[in-house]
Image (cartoon, rainbow, N blue to C red):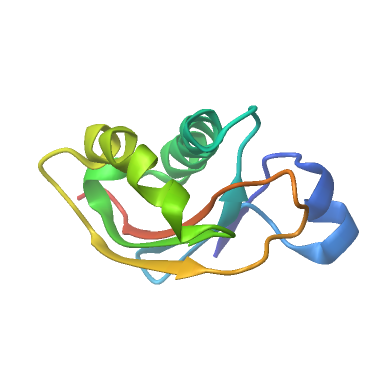
Length: 118
């Protein structure tokens, strides 16, 4: 098993890591990004996730499941082009949940599961 830390402030406070590699799978924790709006936060979160996947030996093409969490489901559509660009021709199974996030400044959180590259 391999544990991957991104050094984020909540990892130590809460007691988790950005990702865990186990059994040929990469489990990436819920990830928020920085920015003033949902689209910039989505791009930022994807960048953090991409770095964790790379460190684990995977990438967006190997993501099999994604969960999108937003405090306002009406913000989701604005992120669709960014998400389509990230996942391209290899779209994962996905779920969108409307819920509260850890801090009201966050507009989207993403959680992914991927397989390791062959």
